[in-house]
Image (cartoon, rainbow, N blue to C red; front, top):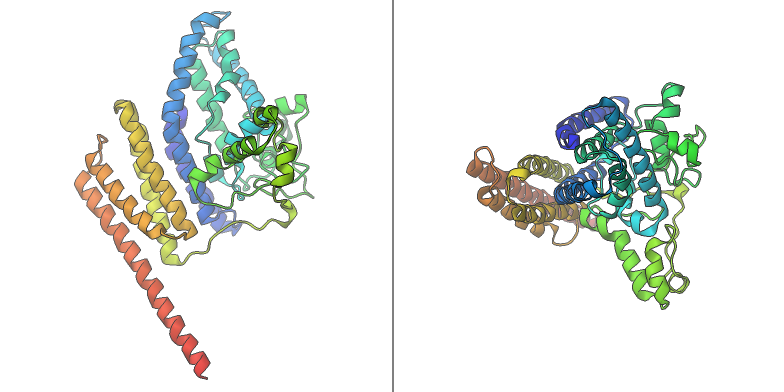
Length: 418
């Protein structure tokens, strides 16, 4: 059973609660654009995960009878507990390698790109990465049945959600010693030199303590969130491919054939000497961090929020009904919703033609609602309502923009007249 899909509504509720607490405390741990970008990356991850998880489960179920050394009874609670612990150790190994190997970091980097740290960051997940599956083959060798593999894996992810917050300080020492907590996971998301590549455990921090990758959160060293090479974009597609693209370019540009392959498995950050000399990476000082954002008017921000809420609703309908829909149509769904996420990301950045892209997105989504096999409440009425709200919002934003430009022009003329 996949507990992540069942937990999504509770995740969203907890995000709302944390946001209210943040407003009450005036902590300012949320940024509108950053939070929406994180949630959109979560949506994209879940949609691509429909195919990835099915593939991984199928491969696991296929190889299980041939490589399992023991027969573990899935009816025993101890088998489930052991499976949960073994899975977390395998996760630790995968997670650590994802920080230490270029090719794996290219996929995992998505989760670390946010320069904020709140519960929306937990849902900021990659849409790539299939190689990670090999790290869990030991469960099949030990005899854990496919249903155990899927269930404990999803429980592991559900646990990791709550540790992505700054509103919980350190908790009782015994718990901090054994389990991953908000404090020691904040360290994991830090780009401070002292915090880099530390605290990789998913549920148990014991693996880090035993294998030398543990670092306590220091009171005199506030965590600086983000990555050492900032993404500086609200484009969820680019967020997933940026590092891959960099590795492809390095592999193409280097003259040594061995380096063309080496760039994918060497330590994170490694680049061929000839490429690093000719195309040096910019150097960013984490202690001089300037968080990326694009200022927007209130009307534009409200439009983004409404579009985001509709995106979440549409995605939830798709996720819960996907198992009963033909697999080939899920590909169409991914393209349609992916285009919508890309469009809204560009709109958040105020890029050229972003309004035109939004118009095309609204048309595409209306057609999707009406023509797709997914069951919506009041399908035609829903599409019409969405179109009216969206186009009405875009027209109002353009009207206020033109009106403001007109007022500014008059004010500028009066200034020179004086």
